[in-house]
Structures are given as structure tokens and as C-alpha cells.
Length: 446
Ligand SMILES: *Cc1c(COP(=O)(O)O)cnc(C)c1O
Ligand code: SF4
Image (tube, rainbow, N blue to C red; front, side, top):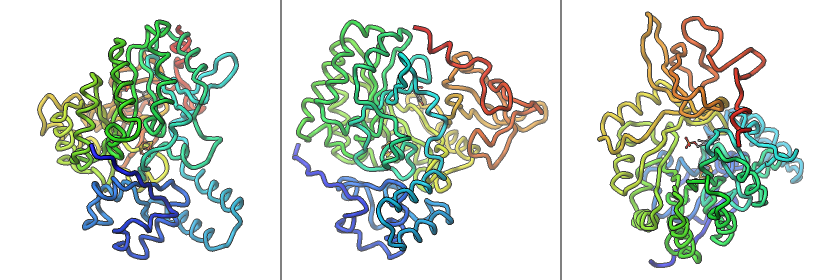
């Protein structure tokens, strides 16, 4: 494999992208303004091989990486525009921009409630919400090879340190996992943990292969590198070591799952991504795929059925379709829940059973992952049928429940229980969310 040189583009140098001259003044202004609030980064693989520059600005991959004016609410756009024209010093500008960011729900779904405490210390680089799976945010992996404009993890990259989940201390992770015998899966996430050097990754993973961690069956790596920089697995200076690490994990008897993030079939079409997928699968690892459904990127059933089919052709396993989270540029990307379900249903009905390992549309919200099963009529009332794919409380999982039909609702907090009920079964009273039985009991299990 020929070595690819890696060049990233941000707000300060994106004008070096050769095709950028095709953008109008307004589009450039949007990059300057929106890019001040939400993180912006792309790279030469994305600009050379994924974006169709004859189709900007509506090209899906352009929209996936480049800020557009409508990605900020109009009021906030103008506030940011004015700030940039006021000749403020760096500190003032930064604090004003952070105030604007706080209006974009930077930490959706109450993620801080997932942070566990051990020996009176809050473990800021761990989230443990579902009994079997621990998320780990290695501090060296809190960036990506490019940034998605819809990203729900954007405060990880925006220098809003008080909102950031990350941890360097592998020892704390190991100590925590040793105590938690019900945990079977550790999921490295970020950012993108495959932006780390292989050496750093080895330091986190190698100890997990020892006998103290027999209860950990699956090591998962959540990554968008296949889509944004497949050379990570092919020709970077430590690619061979990365592949050797994958082989070592599999040889140790553990399952290695790459949770790959693909938003559009274009990302599966280059020679580089195909070679990278094949190289990963040859180690014995699995690749499972996921994406949110996003207006202006993949809001058509044919896009999804094509994507799932291509994934299965390449031996990947379709896993989740998510609803775009309530944060950042959400108002640009959001779709009504009913529309998300219709896209899912139509796409799902066009593919064979080998693609139907996928589940969705699913909302990752405070109580759990809520699956929109569909719209139905029960006792003369039109309702959404829902269920938990994952719950803070394991007893909630897979129990069907009903919400009043609302054609405009885009997120769980806009839904009301059906049949005149006051509460959903998992809510106790109106002092915010309070659960019949919080996951504390679940998570204390060792
Ligand atoms: C989605 C998610 C997981 C993993 O869930 P799976 O259904 O096992 O893939 C774990 N923790 C959190 C907080 C999640 O949002
Ligand atoms: S790859 Fe994931 S974490 Fe990184 S910017 Fe995209 S959505 Fe966010």
C-alpha cells in the first residue's frame, strides 16, 4: 500500500483545499462563524475521495464536515457574527463563545449521571450506564480524523474542559473493571480512540488480556477511522502494529468488535476503505456499523438499504440506526420520529435477512436506548410503540410501551404517555426523571 500523507484542514487553513474556490462568500462566512462555535476539521482523504465538489453545498459528505449557516439557530449565528466583528481579546471571545455553546445543550442525555464513583473519586473518563458495558474515554483519543457537523460529543473537542469526559489513568480503569464482574464489554470511545498511537492503545488494552479480566469477553473500539482515514489500518507508521494488536486480542480468546461509524454509502466505496475492512476482518475481529439518521445526509430509505447491503457485501454487520441527538446543530439535522421510522421501515423491507441485524431508530436518552417500533392504533388511539433496547434499569428492557402519537415530535422529551396516563412506566414523579428503581442496584453488583 502506498503511503498517504495526512493533511488536516481547520478554520485557519481550509482555504488551501484546492476546490474551495468553488464556495461562495456566504459559504465561507458560514465556516468562519459556525466554525467558531462548533468544531470544524476535515482532511485530504475526505476532500479528495469522498466529497463530490460538483454537488456542493448539498453533497452529503460536504454537509457532514463543513459548517453551514443554518447549523446555528439564526439568533446565535448573528450573535457570533457580531462577536467576531468586535475586535475582542482572546479570553473575552472565548468566554462569549462558550456562553453560546451552553445554549446548544452541550451534554445531552444527562451523561454526567453515568460517571461512576470509586473510593470517593469520580471517574471522569468512564461512563457506566448499562450493566454489561463500560465506556472508556482515553484522554489521548479525544479527537477525530475529521469532525462531523452533527456530532454529539463536540464539547470533547471544543476546549470546554469542565464538560469533557476523559481519563489518562489506565490503573483506575483496571481497578474499576476488576470489581465489576457483571461487565462483559469494554468500549473504547471518544472522539475516536484510533487517533491514538498504537503504543498508547496497547498500554490500555494489553493488561485486559490477563486473567484478572476473564469476565471481559469483548473489547470494542468505537471509531470513524474507516470512514475518515482508512490508512490508519493500512499505511500509517504504526498500522502494522495496530493490526498485530488486533490479532493478539483475538488470539487471547476475546472477541474484538470494531463499532464502525458510517453515515453514507459513499464512505464504503473507495479502494482504501475496502482494503482496510478486509485487513481488519483477517485478524478475526468483527465490524459492526452504526449511524444516526440525518436530514440532508441520509434521509432517504434507498440510502440506508444501499449502505446496509454494501456493508454486508464487505462482511460488516449492520447494528444500529440512531435518532440524531438533541445537541449542537440538531435543528439542522433533525427529523420527526415518525419520519425516522418510515425511513427505517422502507429500507428494512428492501433488504434480505442478512442486513436485518440492524435495530432502530433508537434514541440514546437519559433512561436508556429507546427504540421506535412504529406507529399503531390501540383502542382507537394513535400511538407510538416503543421499547428499551438498553435501560438504566435492566428490568425495563424489551417491555413494549406507548406514547401519544405526535407527528412533529423529534425526541423522547416531546412525547407524552398514551391513554391519558400521567407518567411513562419508568418515571416516578415530576421532580425531573426519577426512576422506580435506579440502576444503582444494578451497578453495585460485582
Ligand atoms: C450505546 C451505549 C452502550 C452500548 O450499548 P450496546 O447496545 O451494547 O451496543 C453503552 N453505554 C452507553 C452509555 C451507550 O450509550
Ligand atoms: S467521528 Fe464521532 S466523535 Fe468524531 S466528530 Fe464524528 S460523531 Fe463526533
